[in-house]
Length: 274
Image (cartoon, rainbow, N blue to C red):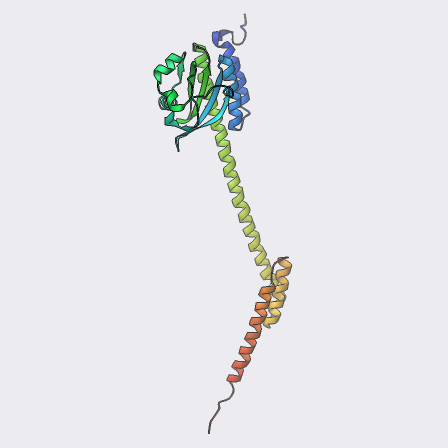
């Protein structure tokens, strides 16, 4: 007799269906926002949480940032806020231990972290599950689920949340790698475009020089050379401003001729005084 798919999963079977849907959806994601949306909603629905939030962490500056949330819009101030990691001792402990923590009633959470409310300015949830996300040993953030009523976290639920946080970490890592790759490709593209422009300018300058030498041939008159140079530059570089350069060359030509005549006069025969 053939058993139905999931029949041997027992209490985990309904949650396994969520995992299947999440896995298929995450396969097509490329951004952090998409990952959070796909993970957070099923997580809240699957175990009956009232709200959920994903906080990303940056080890460089030890800061937490809200990556996405659901269910806190109309509620009281939450414990889960952006800021230094050490300001929230619960999250700091979870990242240090690399283990999820479950609190099935408000008394349990308050007993474990009596100063959490005063340090964050938020109100304690009745029950809570907070799960770390690590990839290759590096912390990416935490998934937090809050409840308005006491909640017993079954073995199946804990298994579900552990798988969920691992999948979320992998998808977030892939999204970050995609962003990094796109940034590198963009930077490399800019470098190649700049190099291409430089090569085009060099080729244009070389072609202009070749055209100039072919045009002037054996011409030695400076004025003629200037005229031919201007013609070549204007044909090779339309719109280029050459007037100022031409005027200066012409002025330099006149000065050169004056100096040459003066020098020729000075080089006349020797003069004798009686």
